Length: 245
Image (cartoon, rainbow, N blue to C red; front, side, top):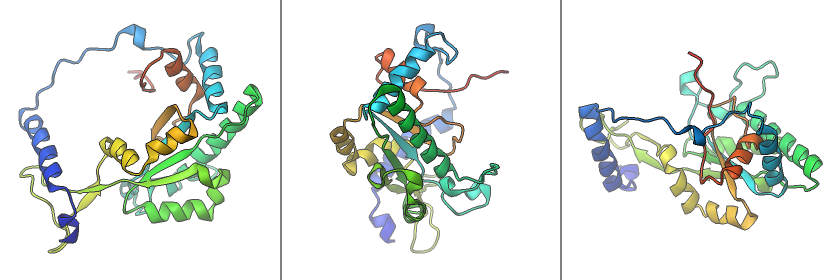
């Protein structure tokens, strides 16, 4: 019962109670689309200026990537962290390797175009079940060319799993509760509790690109997207592909 005693059961109860009305009522509140003034396209004539603005921020060391990588590839038939998996590319590169190599290319491109050599720190959010393997994977592969001080692994807290119907803590044995990483919503707490936000501030980071490891098509630290958010003077932004049907 050690992992139950260590858990914040009061928080678990509050989270469950806040979800319960939605589960029972199944209400859909009216959702309105964002105004056109807040949406733009990568095919916009302004995209080249966004790209250059994003590259400039990268060259000045103002951009980092936070990779959400707490889950295992169980749905893909593997207990390994998802980022370590071979997803069937001709190169057989893992997701972690693809993202790391993309960051390296961006750093070189930004230095060449802007005349400043800045780095893109990679903060990897792991869980108790993936931290050791992810750490070893990067060390065994020399961080895929990234500087060791630019690969920062942060372990995300876990919470007990509860029954959808009753809110009772689920047990995997008589002594141990089932636990799971506390979700994307736990990101800010994880960054704050590990002094990561202070580390970013000391490095001069001003723009954080948060990416899920599942999204293998993501252009991490995408200069066009970052430049767009900077141009809009927006506190945050979201990049997505529009539905075609």
